Image (cartoon, rainbow, N blue to C red):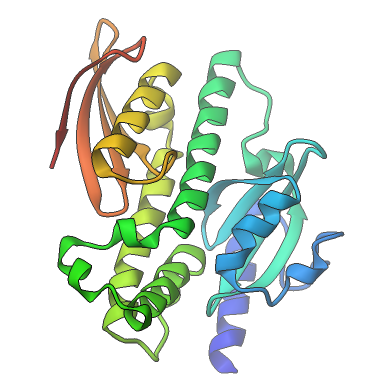
Length: 253
């Protein structure tokens, strides 16, 4: 009880400072009331069915955008279940007016991250470290998924952990970090074609579902040449690419 109350208060304080609203006492977004209490692992597909796309993690909350209704909602998960989901400003979903080039890169980042969320939940096994492959049992994978979802959606490490849970949590933390990095200004500064090309090559080389790889860092060599670091879970690679998306070299590390 104390842990849940403490978490709710922390969500409220962070959201108030970052978003300008107070979710602890805010009304649940209209039409999404039935999602309260749903398992976080089921929320992605359900929101997708209703026209929402994942945009980014902001603090302890997830931001989801509905292009048809032009509606942004903030979702918080604790202990693997949805605790709150409130309507918020469109700007929290990167929908503020800006130059056309910035919009292209903002939208690209949102698409890449959203696709990664769907692909990763559908194929958690692709994010096992090599040492985990031999532990591919139903019990281990169930615990792995529980840990992965806790790290991705709430950042809260459960007290009733296990080896599988711990490994899953570490993978979830890695992916959560990837998503945050993918939404930084330095990454958005790379041309859209360069980001797309390196992300696609990452999916191929890492052997993960299409859309699972995201750019997490960019170094501009000048004259239209870039070194884009891409990531999927624990896997990383350097992608040497030009502004038109032509890849000169791709090295995992």
